[in-house]
Length: 362
Ligand code: PEP
Ligand code: MN
Image (tube, rainbow, N blue to C red; front, side, top):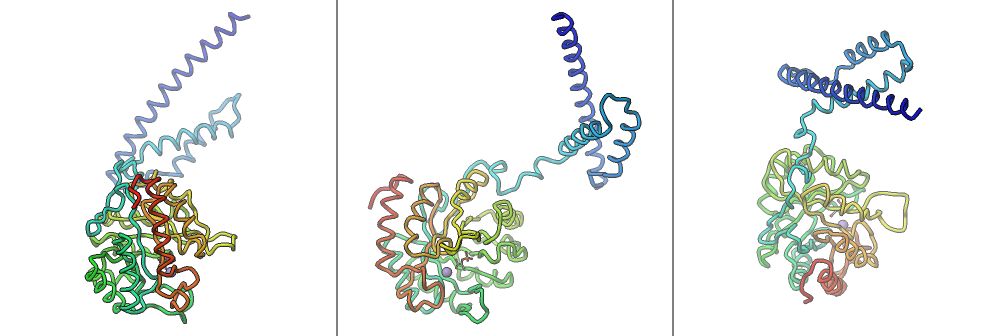
């Protein structure tokens, strides 16, 4: 009895080997076919041909397997062959770590975002006046910050809300940044403005509402300015990565990804901060990742804990909004920090990042 089982098993092992050999022979031929199709620019997947092969096989099938089982097994073989035909290089995104294992470090006027230290982006929601920007910028600078944010083109939910000062806003940002030796991060919403804006900006921000504005992404990719790309409010991580891919595929790999909360059913916060997106993005891409605590939480009382969470989970920096008098701010007045609150926020965050990122406690 044992002997009989042993014999049958040996037979099976032999057949397994033959199948293995045949499957690989088939794969080699499929690869050759792939090359021929490539030369002739023919689509690799040919459903008519697959159907014909399946019909021929089931027509010859004498069992004991049912036709449906035979179809199932062969469809898996066809699928594996098709995958083999696809060029691995084409499948891996340029933003992926598969393509580039080392971290991308972006030099913004000497501030090296992605180098393992934290680099924060701070400033008002919107540029309202020279005085307003200067006051905030001075406070940011006093706390060692270099990257100054401020919206000149504001993509507002309502067309009747303050839309930003436009070019004049960019001019104010540049003047203040030049005076204080800081770098400007500001949102551009129109592809036609990218070239002109390059004279005023150090980093082009592409906002959540424009994450899939493909013409804007392509225009930003054609330039050389670093891009801070925010996650769309209903975008999956895969969609976010593909948006970044639009930029890098045009030649500009200086991209900072920014998680800014996504829309969920939860109403306690303005958006839901998807904190696990940070390590996922860090693992899957070589790009720096920041967390915008202002727009994700929409709550002043959550800015510090959210920022701590961001650093603890591996973010390269935090974005937050600061206004000299938030109560009268023209946008996001509920969640911008006033200057004393900002100063305390930075002090607490610095002592925290000394623990998470090994920076000296100031
Ligand atoms: C902003 O940062 O100014 C902004 C509008 O944020 P988001 O695009 O993430 O809503
Ligand atoms: Mn805002």
